[in-house]
Amino acid sequence: MEEPKSEKETSPWISQLADVDKLKGADLKYRIEELIRIKYSVSAELRELEAKRQRVQTETAVLNRRLDEAKNEAGRRRNELDRLQMSVQQVKKVFQISEIVISEKKN
Image 1 (spheres, rainbow, N blue to C red):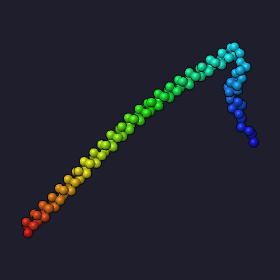
Image 2: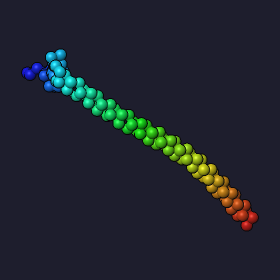
Image 3: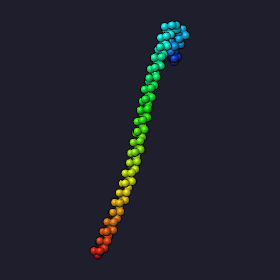
Image 4: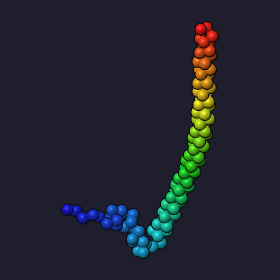
């Protein structure tokens, strides 16, 4: 069975970092510049991700507000429907009573 490789063996960049104390002059300057480029790249990516997170949070807040508004509207419409159904039931009872009264008058 093969032993897992250490980080130093799997990443040449990491092994190069380990040898940084052996660098001189131009090589050291190149490494520092490379690290600075990496830092700026990571910072830019972090800013992009933060902006995206902010957009997603804003969109989520808008959608939650719309959802609450829709729930409130559904509740209002349910109440109106219940009120109309009660009115229909009352009208049906009035008609039933009227029919009874009319049929009794005929007899």
